[in-house]
Structures are given as C-alpha cells and as structure tokens.
Length: 325
Image (tube, rainbow, N blue to C red; front, side, top):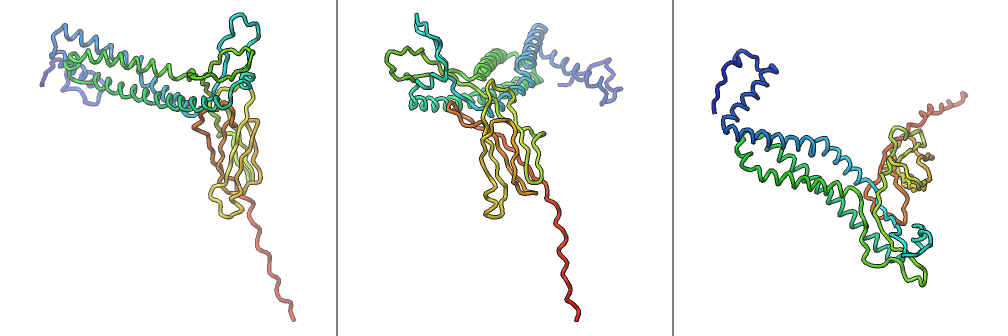
C-alpha cells in the first residue's frame, strides 16, 4: 500500500539521521491506523501495550537469562535425602528424635530403595525444569514475533488465542518456579521396622540440594613438580565437609608414568599435590566425598594444569683427549 505524508520533509532528510527513523515509525503507524476504525485502533493499541508489558515484565529476556543460569547451577548440584520427624504422637513427652538417631532405626534395605526413588525423582524434576524453560523461551519468541507483526488485523482477530497463550505461559512460569526447590519424597511403605514398644514419630523424607564444589581457578597454580589446589562452595555448609580429590597425568608415555594418578580424601578446601613430573599436563577433579544420603550427583568440576619446566640440563661432559706419547 502506498501512503504519502506531507509536511514531514522526508525528501530533504538524510536517510541515516535519527529523525528519519522516527518519522519512518510514524509513517508505519499511520499506515496501520488506516486499516482500522478509530475504536478498533484504540483496542489494538491497548492490547498491544498489554502484550508488550507482559514480555517486558513477566517474561523479559533478562528474567529468562537468570532462569537459564539457575538451571545450569541446578544441573551441577548434588542431591541428598534429608530425614525429619513429621510430628510426635499425641501425649508423648519424649524429645524429638534426631536425624542421626533415625538412621539407626530405618531399615537399610528399604532406605536404599528410597534412594533409588530419590534419584529417579531428581532426574525427572531436572528434565521437567528444562522442558518448562524451553516452553518459556519458545512462547516468548512467538509472542515477540506477533508483537512485531505489521498488520494489526490478525492480531485483533486472534486476541482470544493470545490471551490463552499468556495464561498458559504464566502457569508454566509458576510451575517452573515451584519446581526449582526440591520437594518431598513419597513413602509407600514404612521405613522403620517394628521396634516393639518404642514410640517412633512418623518420618518425613525431603530432597535437599547442596551447591556444587568448584575450583578456584585464580588460586590454583602449578609449580615445577607440585600444584596448589583450592576450591569452594558458594553457600558454606553449617558442618565441615569431606571432599574427594582425583588427579591423573594426561598422555602418559611409559608404564611408570601411568602410575601418576590417585584419589585423595581431603577434609579442607585446599591441598598440595607433590611428586609430579615437570612440564607435563595433569587433570584434577574435586567433589564431595560419598555420603549415605547422596542420591544424585551428575557433575564434578575439573581443572587442567601444566607444571613448569625443570631446570635446563647442563652441557655434556667434556671428553678427555688421549695422552700424548
């Protein structure tokens, strides 16, 4: 459709000037307005502004970027079963049974079954979170394309579908936020065997999340035949933790060099590994030590360092000349 606007002086403006772009938007808006009656145009403007506000506030690119970062963090976390007493029997004056005591009363075989349930539930939850986040990305792309559509008539004709899409995406966002926190494990059978007259409170099993263990890449450095390694947890636990440090020489050349590997238990967040070969590349990994409550740990941090070269070899020994006759 050709549409001529007088009085704007478009023919006298440079095409690369900021004002020319503003005037072009005004021209496009004027063309769109010609397609609708005044009342329909007001309705279109109000609905378009509502959609823009939803994409700016409720489903903004910045918000989705944050959710993607949190999703990546969850994929690196470790997941554990936490055992808590649900409540005490009515009239029971005994103190709460501590979780450490509860482990002594729980049937070990049944608890191993619950750990498998916790592993499956965690994997399913992470997969569902990824799927919900993908739905949010796809939904925003669809609505953004609709917002940029040049013809307002399909926008108005399909507004009922747009409203339904907004409601669906809001529900997806609510589900995503609710699933970000690990939930309760469902118990089908009693975990505590019959202990006679002892009163045992009902047990509540929860999935808990522990932040990943990551190397401090600035403080971890290699020397000639040893390395200094440091790692951290973003949220410090209340109790000291045990870690498992692994190392191995990459590209070993002899049978003896294949022995340049090991597993080291560490009770701190720093460790020095000695007796390494100079000018060689080593791979290090760190994670929490195995615990009885661990159900899922899909990721561990790794770091590659190259030791420094050794001192240069001295000149070859001088050969003594034959004594004169």
